[in-house]
Amino acid sequence: MNYLEHVGKYFLMLKQVFKRPQKRSVFGAALFREIEDLGLKSIGIVAFISFFVGGVVSIQTALNVESPLIPKSLIGFATKRSMILEFAPTFASIILAGKVGSFITSSIGTMRVTEQIDALEVMGINSLNYLVLPKILAALLFYPLLVFLAIFLGIFGGWIAGVLTDLFHSLDYITGIQMDFDPFLIKYAFIKSVVFAFVIATIPSYHGYYVKGGALEVGRASTQAVVWTSVVIILLNYFLTQLLLG
Image (cartoon, rainbow, N blue to C red; front, side, top):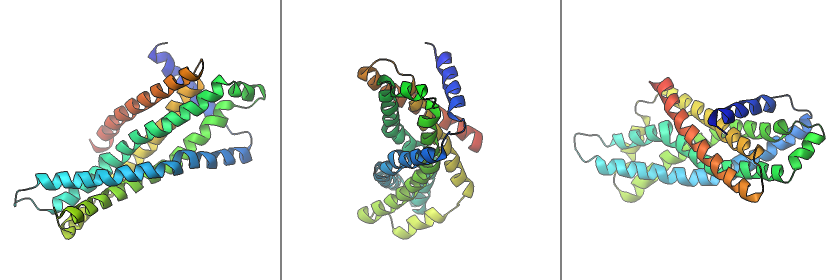
């Protein structure tokens, strides 16, 4: 099956996904369940990695800023810009593509190979709408919050790294954070997080929904979903950066 066929099936899948839910009560319960599975259970890993990434960025910047002509406030400025522009929205999304993407593919794929999806279709339920739409909405609602949490913890982690290593003073770091603040960069990070959240929810769902075979094929589909989700995120990151900042 060629790539164009996959792309066509993907967009046909989205057409079915965005039909009106049949029962709002059932849909609401599914949405809150997906928020817990895809969002709340991802806070720990995103917070842990963001905190230490911010610390590493600040330490590396401090070690490379040795000239007395360069102000130490550049460390806080560089950490802030790095977390907002790239590390928080893109790096966190890559992490979520691995953690959440494999979970989505394996859960839907297991339902496919055990014929649970066929049972939903027999009962007249739009299985794509029932299974995928709550995941998309949960990701769109919660992942921007995770990205903003990653920004905050990354900047905070950089400050903690300076306090523990004495490579720079807290006042210089805070001055750098406050220096040349551009509100559009927050909007830029928000736009990227929303786009990446949609990709993370839909591409793994596609691989899981159309899997054929047994448990082995579900595992392979999970791997493919993570790979293709990461590839699409990297490509979209390039185009969004060029479009919004170019």
